[in-house]
Length: 265
Length: 272
Image (cartoon, rainbow over all chains, first blue to last red; front, side, top):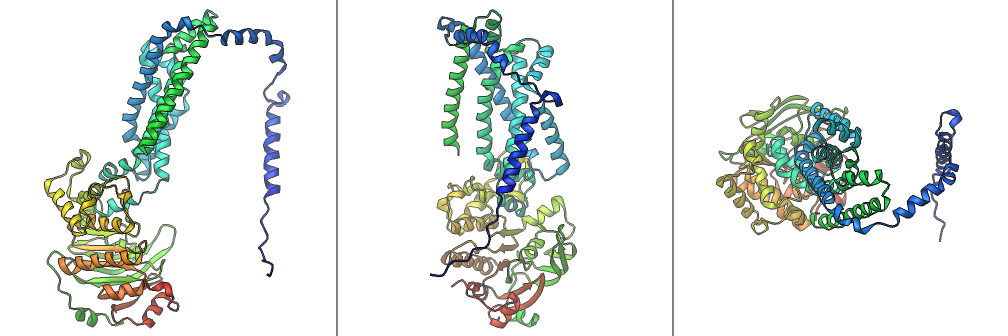
């Protein structure tokens, strides 16, 4: 047999090595305080070890007798998560179709909405919660509003980008039949995008449980209020139980949404 | 070229619902600078069955899309029935499209939507946006959709999702969608290019039946010479965005096809 003649194999090894070296150097430079980097004092970890160890032992011994007091706030957290996710789901439907280019060919209005969504997304949830607690008072309402704002930002951005990159030959079909954009969206683009929406809706529900656990710290209702209260009393065994419960609930919701997702696609 | 005599020979009798198509010196240049059509003039009588033959990139997809305004002509005039397509916008353009059925190489159905609602897309131009948004359809629309499905033998699949169908079944659903429009002109852009040979013949047969039974003007883009000869009466050859042949499809010689393709005939130029 004659030897096969291959074209020369392009080598990218040098380029890859250079890129990795550059990133490593940059990261190291970031940790040098003398030139404006951050100060990483690993010694502090050793010096303060006693404090941390005491806290850890407490955290490792959850006080289960505290359970009855956590039920109400945990239920409140779940309710906030659900209401926030549901409201965001409803509002996100038309807005997402507005933000995606196949479903809204009008570039200026699309860009306007995308800019607004980007602004909404760039504000941290705790900032929303703090401002809304000041505006609406301590309670679940500012919490739900925070979750809502956080959720629509995520859903509109991710789903509209997914619609952009999906295959949409059906659009041309609807257009050739003389449909308006609204007709095409309602009858074809929307059903085609259901799985994309459902995925994100379930994901925001999951996120909401996790976030609303924190929101209580600034007074926006839910189980976070309890964490804040017990922490102030240094009752870390109670905090530990609450953290454990949050973990359990998040895992359960994730399992449930995985099952739902499989059925939806 | 031998245009007028051949067309008269074809003996087409135009039906009343069917429309003629006229392109007058039509050119299309895309925003990226590609010229897809240059100075094409064409007269198609109502009720004709015409194939447009050419290799990919010859401009046949662009040509067929200028007829329903999916691609606007950069210069020249396109006339379909009573409409001057050039310059039409908004509601009037949608009305015109409502009279022109179209099927595509990729079927262009919504895969997650059932066959029934895919076919009802054909009633968009005759339905107000509000009614569609509310999900309402009239008894007349439903009747038209089901009759059209029945006429292509797809009625039993009415509740199936379009994505579950085979390629041939999808194309027949797409034909039903176009027929539901009660069109005056039928356009087909490479309708059999994604289908296996037997299915391709079924679909071409459907198109021919639409032409003979309903007297519709039918325009088919195709790159296969045997299908053009077998199913259409008049053939238009496109090469590099210009018409290089216009005459009888049955009488087109191998020379004519080589002239259209700009190269010798290859085995892939025939279906069977």
